[in-house]
Image (cartoon, rainbow, N blue to C red; front, side, top):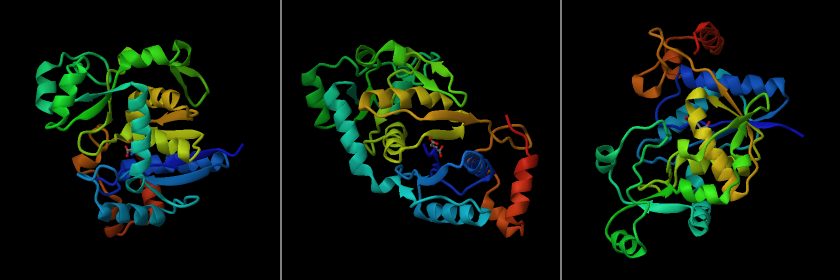
Length: 277
Ligand code: GLU
């Protein structure tokens, strides 16, 4: 079987060294395994993603010499498919509408080690109350982790790592994560699972920062009847202070390095020398 992986950046800013490090991890894995490497632009968050960032990202990747197989997939063009998956989950009874504001959630949250600390305020609203509130309040859709536990078998609650070792997880550790956001009625989790299935991705290679999302993805795959890829979480590139590079912290962008006159080979060397964690 031909292996398939993907690089899936979100165009919420310009491509920085940390993103390119991730793209190069995907590229080198694909080369080593004679796998296809696809590019997916995760641009559903219209409040933060901008077309000019997408354009520059595609251009920077080409300049870096990272080549992709097939057509680029744009999540912003696939909203109907995410909605179909959302409706399926709603019909299965595993989602519930959540009317809470960010402020209300913060005020009521007791911190636990769960991925999502939502205090489950809206979990037990009765049907009448839900109907009434839906008329005048925007709402998100949350996964009812307790109901999910009655629909998926405990022996399926694992994901496979790069050594094909089972990484077990517990639904309580996941919490009632948002599957359909209030503003866009989809979430990163749902879109990524629908697309990894649509693109028949066999191996997901992504940063360690997303490791805690993998149980959510596996759970959605079980509910939606999708097969699960193998997940390889790579280390993260650190800046000179030893903290993780992130777009929001004004990390070095590829565009700025290009403007400084560096070549793609120079950038690759720079990344090889940088420290990871
Ligand atoms: N779009 C996500 C990001 O830029 C990555 C998604 C993934 O690899 O699953 O952080």
